[in-house]
Image 1: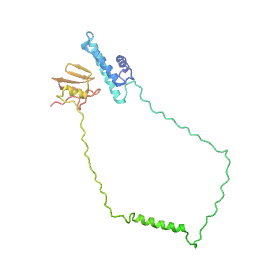
Image 2 (image 1 turned 90 degrees about the vertical axis):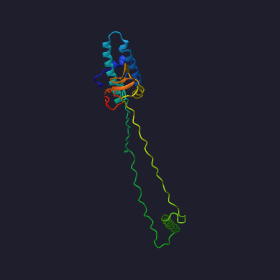
Image 3 (image 1 turned 135 degrees about the vertical axis):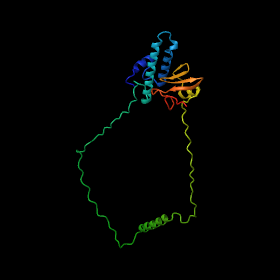
Image 4 (image 1 turned 120 degrees about the vertical axis):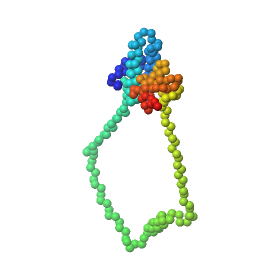
Length: 225
């Protein structure tokens, strides 16, 4: 769609830049459509109506591109972060003098097995016995305590309310709350680009949801009873 649509022509005609914000682009389109409305033109209505239809197709294609890519056609894409490779300096130490090997360790002293145990050894043995006794019964003199009970309370998940959609018999105020302001109003029909909604006596009686600008409805046309 983007390759077949002349977006530069659209920007020039609306008087905006591809880098403009989405709100500015929509406002410029609505003002231009209002100026091209056939009711305001005296001559050349056929040519103006044809150009208005082409403009609506271009606008719908631009909005579809923005919805998919998060920007208007022709706008600069967000820059990617630059990855800077860290340089690792490698040094050689060939010119360093070679150190002499360490002297051999002296043989460890072997205690005499027939000598009496020292005071430190006795204290260490008592500490080991006390630790074993404590791990077996951490609180031998503590009174009997009751076990702690934990109560797990469950909460019901709140129900999710479905978003409102178009339906037959809906008022114009309800349609405006769902779809927003129409781009163009022709008698009893509201136009949202290539899509439209028709009213009779202020209530919805028909609609058409185009793939270029879908309405908030589950079907392209209403299902009549």
